[in-house]
Amino acid sequence: MRLWKITLFSALSAFFVWLFLRRVDFAGIRDVWLSIPLLYPLLFLLLALPQYAVRARRWGLLLRPFKAPIPFRSLWNFSLIGFMISYLLPGRLGEVARPVLLAEKEEIKKSQAIATIVNERLFDLLTVLTLLCLYLLAAGGNPSPVLRQLRAAAVLLVPLVILVFLVIAVANSPRFFPWTEKLVRGASRLLPRRWREPAVRFILNFVRALRLDLGGRGMAAVAGLSLLHWGLIALSYGLLLHGFGIRPGLPAIAPFLAVVFVSAAVPTPGMVGSLDLAAKFALTGLFAVPEKTAVAFTILFHFLLLAPPIVLGLIALWHEGLSLRIIGRLGRRT
Image (cartoon, rainbow, N blue to C red; front, side, top):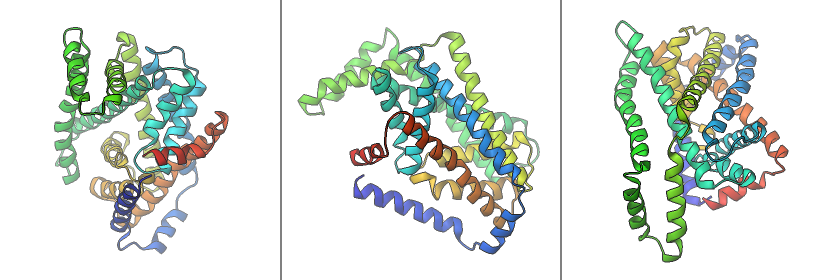
């Protein structure tokens, strides 16, 4: 990885960690941890398994127009390998690594596999926003400042996500696709001549692959699996909060889920700092959790989030006959 990227992401993480740990009473945090029943962290870890299984199954549905069926083991292994890489390296490299590695094994076009990750993330964003909007519509009383900020963000993001889906549909329509091709070929003139045609082929295949050619039942299945996936995540968050004596009720997890989702997009290694600061902000702002408890929860929460995909990702790497050298290779390419 280039030195400037390492420096930038490391500095960003360090700044967020400093903000997160200011005025922290570490002795008090230890006391909070000792008071937590072990059952709740264990349940949190166990629920990670069906979450990744549902995500792998959904990815298989998105890949179905290009190859069906793809073995569940491949979907499971490369999903976990991708998340492991994202958590060990800055820049969310796993989002590119997992479709590329799967494409190489299953002999499909890399542009097609990468397009499914874009669609997957769009479904994730739309699902989290839907859960947040449903909660905001149902919540009564005077909303907290954090909820007002989330409401303003949802008002902007929901139409934006819908617009992205519409743009993808229009760009792929028989009537407008010739214009899409002309635009891509025109933009390719900015590249050296020897790269133009390969770049045009890759981008056009990528754009075509963004079209969700799944049919009504396929779309409903992807949407249902998205709701199940994020419902399991919300349940695991709620159980861990319960262990800390924080009991907002399952529907009220939606705004906390939204804050964590946004913070996870910041490309710091292992979400260090960005996730911690956001979770602490959400806990104190949404549920009036004392700062000591919020910090104690967030540290354990962050560890429990990272442990399953890293451990399972290493096992998946071994199953696929790969080694950790692939992480170094990906790092050198960026």
